[in-house]
Length: 283
Image (cartoon, rainbow, N blue to C red; front, side, top):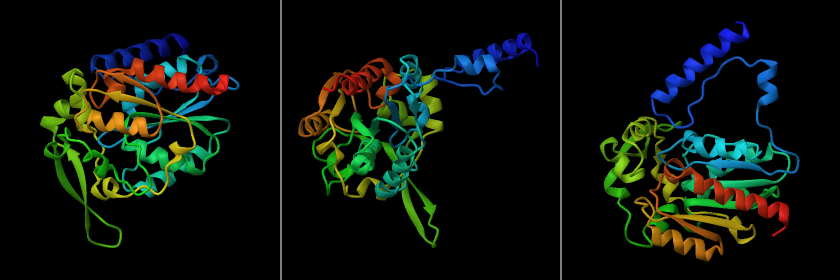
């Protein structure tokens, strides 16, 4: 395919993706040498940002944040989290961190906050932790325990239980948000055409993962930042403020739902950039 026809096809595909209303939609097209030269690469000395999604979401929930961070010259990774168990999820993310050379800003949303707190505990390349409407557990605390610390969560009424087979036989429970309640519960204010796609592609989380106590709390030793979402219906905002204060995190407050990286990617990106700049300035 020559360069002119290739650009025409690419433009058409991207226009179709935009028409679906999918934030950060990407189309895979064979790259030319010119394309590769224009791709965003991490600048020398710039930390890599690793973004960890939480329950009922996937890595695409970070799409708009990824685009912004790349424009600022950051290398960005947004791996898919298994959502099967806190210890096993943290071990998987630790393997991702081990593949990165140089300093890392590690970001977690929702349940992903518990995961980064554990994964960073023995990862010396992680220099900053950023919690986005996320759990920040102490050793021995679980996500469900923290949710129940303060009133206000409506997640219990909005979820449905599914069952999946275990390798050795038997079944275990996993949770999903009911599709008809997804927008109100998870992403109020986000256009319906987007939340319908999010609801269809949501990732279930095991009940065991939400009940599993933390065995590490990296925020005790690594500088932390926290974004409180004041309209959060999954984690009570009062619990978010309490966890941020306990972690002595640099805290910002945004009027946003739980899915703040989708509804308000600008403030999320700004907080991550503040954490990244602190590494270069030494503060």
